[in-house]
Length: 234
Ligand SMILES: *[C@@H]1O[C@H](CO)[C@@H](O)[C@H](O)[C@H]1NC(C)=O
Ligand SMILES: *[C@@H]1O[C@H](CO)[C@@H](O)[C@H](O)[C@H]1NC(C)=O
Ligand SMILES: [Cu+2]
Image (cartoon, rainbow, N blue to C red; front, side):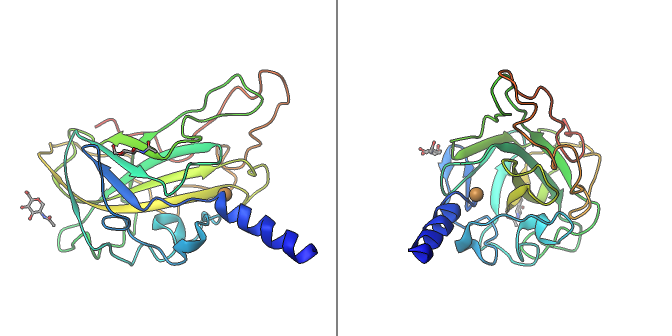
C-alpha cells in the first residue's frame, strides 16, 4: 500500500511538470523538437534547479545538442513556445536570445559566454493569497522578436521559473527550452546588457528564492523582482 501511494505521488508530481517542445510562428505550431533542442531526460518533464549548472542554459545537454531544423522568422514578428501540457505552477516567464557568432552555425552553437540578452519577461498579478502569473493554466506563450534585431542566426531561450516551492535555496524550478532561429528583415539594434548562462542568476536572487505565499494576508504579497538583466527594448 505504501509503495503504491509513493508511486502515485511520484507520477502525479511528474504530471505537474512540463517542457516546451514546440515553437509557434505566425500562429502555426511546429512539430515537437523540430526547432527546439530536445534535451536529455525530456520524458521526465523535469525542471533544472541548479542555476550554476550548464543545464540552466538550454536544459540538460541542450547546449551541445542540435534541433533538426532552424526556423526562419521576421524581426518584429510574433513567436511563441508551446508547453506539452498546461503550465501548472505559478512563476515568472522570461525569454532570451543570443546571436550566433561569425564562423558558427546555430545548429552547433553552444551559447557559451556573456552573450545572452533578455527580450521579454512577465509580471505577477497582485491581490490574491499568493503571487499569480498570467502563464498559470495556459500552454501557448508568445512574444515579439525585437524589430531592430540584426538579421542572422540566433538561439532563443524560454524559461518558466516555477516558484511554488521557492522559499528555500534551490527550490525554484526552471523549465527551459532553446529554439534555433534565422531572423530576417532585421535592423541595426545593439542588444544589451549581455549575460551568461550560468551566471545571470544566483540561487538567492530575490526573484528566485522567494515565498510566493507570504505575507499571509487577504491581499497577499505586493512586490516581485524578476531575476536577470533588464529587457532589451529593441
Ligand atoms: C496554441 O496555438 C495554436 C496555434 O495558434 C492553436 O492551434 C492552439 O489551439 C493553441 N493551444 C492552446 C492550448 O491555446
Ligand atoms: C537565413 O536567412 C537568410 C536570408 O533569407 C538566408 O540567406 C540564409 O541562408 C538563412 N540561413 C539559414 C540557416 O536558414
Ligand atoms: Cu512540476
